[in-house]
Length: 115
Length: 114
Image (cartoon, rainbow over all chains, first blue to last red; front, top):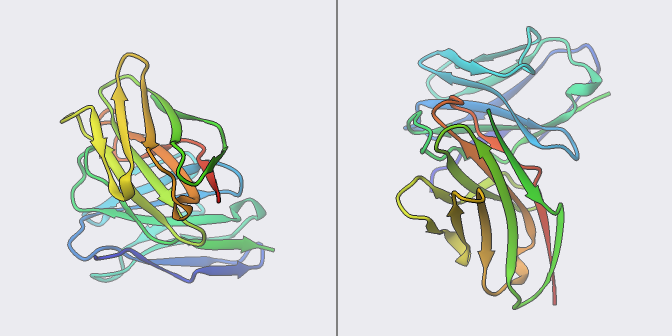
């Protein structure tokens, strides 16, 4: 069964450094998402992306965050200047279509640790 | 606005016993509801979804959930727990009014005792 793949599985970065988290969505999917889960808290929506532009973003997704689909397969999340509070598990997801009844398929996540 | 509340952050069941995970939601418009499971060191895997076709939804691994608009709830059950069911379970809601995002509950960690 096709999967969403994320790399790396664990990223350790110094505070203030830039970090890029990578995702390869399922190949025929058109909608892409990032979520994060801070330890002990709920999974939170960050951003959705369709047709090479952001379709929706949450309050968390401020100017420090950006997303990009640099080629036909990768979908990346960049954090420009990381803070301690950015430490979390980051999940990428994709869906074939954007309707609300369509399930989103998740990757295994990248654990981001900011020192 | 939409929100999800999962009652009980931890549930312990004996192998062979009923598993019941509670999920209550609020949504200003008809919702679509999902249950995801997360095994250790893995991502979120879709268990089942409610998309208004039938109120009792069957998913993978013997799980099912019933949509009750009157409560409103979408509780997850499995008649007989297996050791492999030990995982964290997330209820999530999505609606046309709320855009593309899934709104998750806090998760319930299931421990299965032999």
